[in-house]
Amino acid sequence: MNTVALGELVLTNARIVLADTVLDGSVRVDGGIITDIGPSSRTGHDLDGDYLIPGLVELHTDHLETHFAPRPKVRWNPVAAVQAHDAQIAASGITTVLDALRVGMDEHADLGATEMKTLADAISAGNAAGRLRAEHHIHLRCEVSAPDCLESFAVLQDDPQVRMASLMDHAPGQRQFASADAYRVYYQGKLKMSDAALDDFIQRRNAESIAHAGPHRRAIAEICRDKGIVIASHDDATRDHVEEAVTLGTEVAEFPTTLEAARASRQAGMAILMGGPNVVRGGSHSGNVSARALAEADLLDILSSDYIPFSMLQSAFSLADNVQAINLARAIQMVTKRPAEAAGFHDRGEVAIGKRADFVQVRVEDGIPIVRTVWRQGRRVI
Image (cartoon, rainbow, N blue to C red):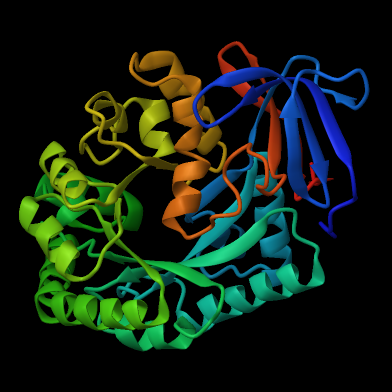
């Protein structure tokens, strides 16, 4: 999909969502850049009074793997997997995406570092050929408790597409699964283990976390600082977790699991990211703090689609409808301007003169935002 800008474009009769307000009017684009915002013009592409918002900027989606490995031991063509993923991402209003690739595998993982490199190469090829609707980059999800984490990280650390790395530990009793009961419910359902087999698995995973998590966190954080890769924490549950993240140079707090951790992250100056599915469902599937509760406490900066691409847009409109202190302009910032800033994209994420002309035309029907058209750098891609 060639996304080179097509010269002048005028979008009119729109409800334009700016950084701090909603304006009825028109937007003029030239060379893929916004050149004017003003009253509705008599000429141009009529948006029928729909919202015009910036293209969404997604920092953490696990969705690509489901296209590449849709069933255990099944592998799809990586180029086709990236194309299918890209189509769903763009149709959800996302124009810039950090595709999450896992680094570090436990014994039940069905994918390895070689396959992650295959996907990274397919993303690079799609970007270079101009056939992707969204602009794709990479987020490395580093399972620091896994024995092969550092070795796997080395396979991808020099890829120029890598913009962010999150440091995570999904061992039982850690972070996302501080409750042993919640861990058992999740993993017995996922892995179909007997009680005895799960007991053995938990014992091994705890031993791996004790042996590897600390050294791997420190080593990967040092590499990221040297390379200018944004560091994100993941599932912090306590003030101690946050203090450790601060020493590593962490800038984004992904999915804090408690109010205590979110408050400590705010005090440390981190951007707090939560999942769109948490907002839409009204709570965490793991029983952790709800994103809506953090929003009501003014402890939410960024929304991510996590595992459902459309949840990003849906959750922004949901917050605007359901949290009194958050209007639509502020909610849209959480999926555009704030994630763009966190990832170092200073040329996009806002409908403002001089910014990239990445737009989404949205109509709300029965409380659900409907994506009608998407433009990237002034060219229609959906």
